[in-house]
Every structure is written in C-alpha cells, then in structure tokens.
Length: 414
Image 1 (spheres, one colour):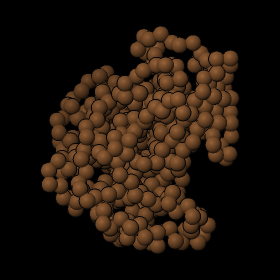
Image 2 (tube, one colour):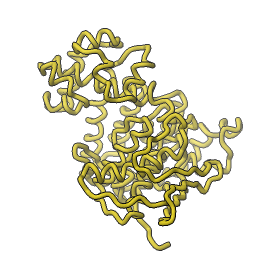
Image 3 (cartoon, helix red, strand yellow):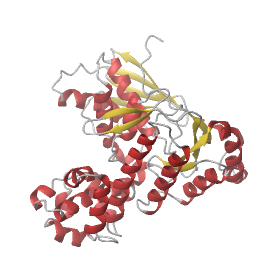
C-alpha cells in the first residue's frame, strides 16, 4: 500500500534556457545544474541525490523512443523537490522521487502516459542509479489508492484492490539503521538479484530445460511456469539446489559458461561478481522468493472474506523470519524493532522495503494504535533518543500509523 508520507516535485518550464536546475527545499541537499541532453550519463559514482531526478528525466525520453513516439523539443526546467519520506528508511524515498520526477517531466512537456506505462518506465530508469530495481516500489507509488492495499503483479504490471479488514491499522517504525540501496547494491540488493537469476538458470537446467534456453532465464517466475504452483516450485528448489554457497567456478562448470560472460550485459551484475567473495546462496534465496510470493497471495485471499487478523499477523511474522534467515536482508536493529512491535501488542510485524536497515511495518487493531505506539517508543526508541540518535521532537517521523493512501497525482496552476 502507499503510505501517507509524500514526495512533491514542482516544475517550471523555462523556454529561454537549455538547463535543468534541480533544487530542494531542504538546504541540506544542494542545488545542481544539468544540461537538457536526454542521453547524458547519470554520475553514479557521485551518489548525489539528484541522480534520481536525472533517472526520471531520462526515463521519460527513453519510453518515448521505445514506444516509437516523437520526442518533444528539449527545454529548460526549474525543478524543486520537497518531501517527508525519510531517506534510507526503507520506505522507497528514491523510488518516490524518481516517480514524482517522471510525472512532473511528463506534465511539463504536455505528455500523457497511463499509470502502467509510468510505473514500468520508472522502474527501468531508476536502474541508471545502479540498483537493479524490481518494480514494486514504483508500481505502488503510481497505482496506490486511498483506502485499499494493492496486490501487484508483473509482466505486465497490474494491480488488484485488496480490502484490508475493518478495525485494523498499520504502524511504521524506522529502526534508524540507514539503508542506502545504491551505495551498497553490489554486496546486498544487486547481489540478491544475481543470486535469484543464477538460481533460475540452474533450476531450469535441473528440470530439463536445454542449456541454451536456460541461459536466457532471468527470474524465478519463469521457472515456476515450468513447475506449476508456488508450493511445487519450493519442492523443486529443495530437491535440486544444494545447501550452502555455490562458487563462481562451480557455477561456470554447471552452466557451461563463465559468469563474466553470462552477465556481461549488466555493469551492475559484473560489479557484484567483482565483490562476491563468499559465493552465491541459490537455494535459500529461491526458497524465500517462492514462499514469500505464496504468503502474499495467502494474505490477499484471507482479506477477501471474514479475514482473521491473527492469520494475517502470522503471515507477516513468517515473512520477517524468511527475510532474516533465507534472504538475509534484515539487520539486528530491524530484528529488535520487529520484536518491540510484537511485545508491545502488534499482531504481526516484518521489515519493509529492501531491508538491511530502514523500517518495519506492524499490523495492529485500531483501538490499540495509541497504546502500541507508546509502548514501542518506550521499548525501542527511548534509549536511542537518550543516545542522541533521534530527537524526541522528531519521533513522529520515525514512528507513526498509516492507512492506505493515494499514489502519484498532478496538480496544475498552483
């Protein structure tokens, strides 16, 4: 679901200029100027916040080319960014910014795209920052609606309304361990992408797919189509992928092709290979992906008729355990926060976002919201406020309740 925190991008067309001037209402984030060349390279080495603005800018023109539409004339833009989504909090601040810029640039050039098109192009263009994004964050940033959660599917991108149970609410807490996806992608986020791709190829070959065809596999969902159900896919993983790490040499021998050659088309994946010293955990990653997908569908199905909050909470708890043990994308601060939510009376809790820091989300009964918030502040945040990691007056930004909110919108003439 989309949360109530937002990112706002204001844009003014400057016909007399050939520059993009990008500023932020927060003086902590400096202004930067770019030319309007849509083919300019995003400076990933700088890790500057405006990289996400340039991703969104380039993405609009990429999409026009891919869909064989005419490109508008390049024109200067003055872009001002404001937002309440904390950076590095696991609440998709980078994707929110990318999506907001895509919509703003689209509007500034009098273009019109569908929500599906915007979600898809925003996912693709954010990869210019070096993170191999899967598209979930962008999809909900665009497709979110007030009052309902969304079941998001891909290939093609589509969403289905999920009515959450009456009397329920979600609480969000920031564990205060910063999660910067782009900076650590090669050893965390992008490593998981590579591990899942390799798992899909090895598993496909074990299931009888020819080497040439299997080497074209990129996702575990492709393998599921061979097997059938998510449950059967889990069983196939347990049967055919061994425990422990696969080495690069072992994988090269199994695939009949070096990993450098296989991943040559992705600089982000090659960077993963350069830094991967501990090998690749294919079995655990695949087990997590299939079991997590099954939990998502069980959650959605449970919401359809006389839902049990306890069942939903149990699914969230199982999800966090899988993230912690199989996908290894949690951290001690997130684990501590999740446990604080549970001990404070939450029905279930799990990390949210990419992990390795950031935030956790908890399911509670609406009549317990204030009590649980108060107890989590005491259990988890009090010591951190005392240590200076968080100011007491800023607690509302680190711990809050949220109902499903709206995705992207355009306001004109303000």
